[in-house]
Length: 238
Image 1 (tube, rainbow, N blue to C red):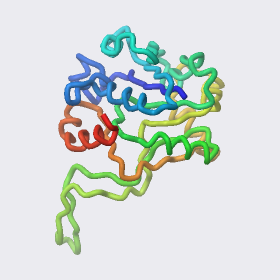
Image 2: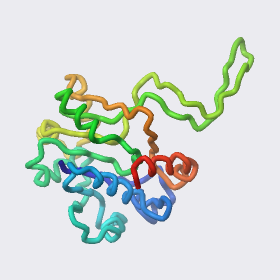
Image 3: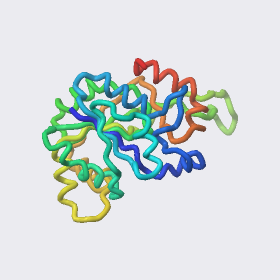
Image 4: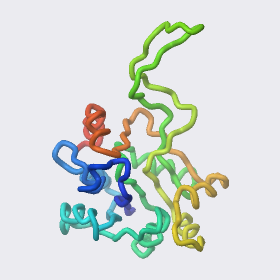
């Protein structure tokens, strides 16, 4: 199975930092974010190649320079045609694959890819998305009765009414076929492809349970969540 890392994007949420380096190169304990993702993917025996998509003609060139000529890592220039368009752009690299992993680089999480793959297969779905149903809040909450605060709960773990989607997917060939059928310049994977598949009950959800997840959008977020970040890296075995 191949793994595709989407490391492009403008990094608007990470400005002004991303004016100088791509989000993928955000430093964590002396190493860039993308290094943790790559090493984690490599730790799974069934992952035989990693394809990194980024703007290598721009700031993304820093990613290529960092990894150099490592084996089993392929670099593909961002197509500037949306997330779906990028997958179509690398179709030749996936032609012999029945399914593949898609990992948005700003997702830091020790997802159990072995069980996610089993779940994907058992549900016979065309796509599987890592999800979570609870999260630790960053602000304090209060228990209020009749306008009176009875108790404070500092940064509690909240049960979510809706499952939150992470940017970690397993996708089958049907997804590429759907993308190919779209006759438009820019294709958004979520809105143009997965939305329709969900209406056909063809997308499964893999709940990460008690595993931590951080949306690594900027150095500020990572610094604010340093304890969680370190816990995730430990869960990754890195």
